[in-house]
Image (cartoon, rainbow over all chains, first blue to last red; front, side, top):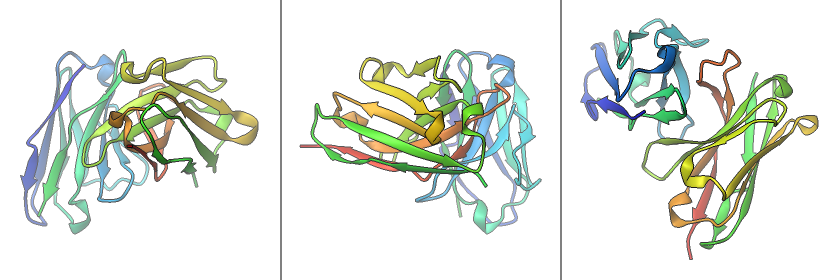
Length: 105
Length: 120
């Protein structure tokens, strides 16, 4: 399964809403779709799993939605620490990541 | 607190080998699948390999099959990746990652990574 994320770059200001898209080339098995955040020089961090469940310690301004082939990560109000690259990832017959969306100021 | 600490990266010539190691602490290592995920410089993430709790099942991305071997030593709380016949395109930061215990296919804890550079 190929995951295509859009847009490639999202330019927003703190306090604004961010909407990131992840589209799969086939249905994602049981909606096993996760989202990760990566800041420069750091390892990725799990944000969302199962399309909509927040990982431990993740603020509730992060939310995931979608099913089948279309998934969305929403950050309701951007904080300065949210500017980063975001990846979606699926598990079906294998494990694949999208190419990433950079959220920049 | 879950901790994953990788080591063993470095500069290697094309065709060479490296053994990456990952020490795990803060959780019961023997109860989790484990994985390696890599990231080429300036690029996205690529899953490389998974290994079952007892080492009886292993899965690899097609591009490394026959060249890389994932293994583990539960007595030492350690994960390994033997990388052989290295190519320039294997240059990347290699992350040791804990796989979710619910079988839902996500990676819930990541190490800081070790850099492998394949160059002459």
